[in-house]
Amino acid sequence: MTVLNKLNDALIHRRIQEGSELLERTHKSANKLSASDMHSAAFAFCVSQWMDIGYGSLQVLDELLAKFTKIDRGRMNFKDYIQLRMAEAYRAFAVEDAQKTIADLDFVLQIEPGIVGLQLIAQAHFWKGRAHRSQGEYELALLHILKAKDAALELKAPEFVASMKIHESWLLFQKGQRRDALRLLDEAEVELATTEHDLALGNLESARGRFVRRSGEYAKAVEHFGRSVAIYSRRFSDHPNLARALVNMAYVKRMIALDLRERIGEARATAAQHNRCREICQEGLELLKLAGSIYSRRNHMTGQGSVFVNASYLHLDCGDIDLAEDEAEKAYLLGEQRQDHILMARARTLQSILHHERAEEQIGDSTDTAKHAALAKSCSENAIEIARMTQNKRLLAGAYIARSRTAAGDFFRDWETAKQFAALAGELLSKDDRDHLSKELSHLKGVILRATGIHDQLRSWSEGVIHDKTFQQVEEEFAEIVIPKVWQREGRKISRVAQKLSISPKKVRRVLRNVNLLEERE
Image (cartoon, rainbow, N blue to C red):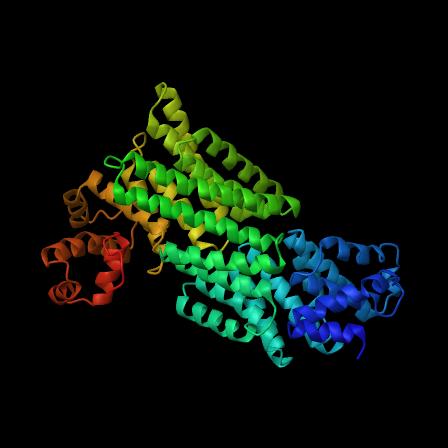
């Protein structure tokens, strides 16, 4: 078996230690390869796949690709040319050029699998799916991940399949298929447990952390992210995925601080409790500092943008709105430069929140208040416009909530608009969404309801004034008024409410969760 065959076999079965040692031994001889050598393009493609699972730096691949800069590609063997294009596609993916990645792989995937081999086709679909995911194009991402998985199954490479299941799991979770998503992670862990594939194992724990985070189980999320950090650190102390886990942990730290602040109440909090909230936020900022240094060394712009966004929220929570605005502006400019719609929408939503805070402070003259209120409205509308360019439902829900919050603010008091966008946000959040977004929406609905009055709402409905709402939306709003009241009267017993109103206990639970009255599953 040739060295290249050994590397490919170790790769497909994720024998990381064996492959890494073999690459180290062949590094010098590989550098002596010229573009005209028989296996030079195949070796470049092989190295790009090893880099994808954590081996080496981009410089290694760049040195190999540099050999092909002056060659006449029209004279290349066709299979060599395709393998070169695959290596270049990975390089584009590694530097976050999703559009070039997708274009290169589109070309490759037009070729019959029998010509280039099933492993190449599986890898092409795998990278293309991930490139679409980075653009927020989740349906296309899932399509290609599933095609990659089918090809890997045909190759009888369960470890390769397991890596794909982690990505499939995340995409199913985005579609609200939580149970299937968790099952896939469990299946992937069984296959990967006996491998040294620390990058995939770290990804697996990180995915679990994000799943439980969304259900509001922040302590569990910290545990999962902590485990992912420990796994990544064994081999990849400077990898962007480690930085991503640190950012996720910082995000959860903020959620923990917000929950603590909500439980103790701003008015009756002691100095020690206030200090504890600030300490947790500072812990989050320290994690972001570590993540930012990794992203900076790796020139990873998407990750750096995520650091800016999360740091901005933490500075806002600590009362430093000026610094929060600086970080939010850096995030938006970076997103705009790269045409990263997810980052741009996140930054615009954040800027809307910051301008709303300025307007609500009502410090300075009325002109300042009007300016910030108008900017809050403009930023939220821009966030909605950009978020609609992706298939990220929570991104769009966050933008809708920002627009609703601005409409419900002291400057506009536009309750119908506030209700309209709150309802749109509610349609995008599932029953499993129990984190800050659902709490923000619940609080916002309460503010709107108290301001407009239940009686006014019922009177409008009785007169047929529903403001372009569907019957289902009206029914949902009515349920959120009636069911909590009956629940209170019936001693907070879900079974009694279900029996009294002749509805399912499941619906009672869902409505109570929507209005943030049911914290734990019963």
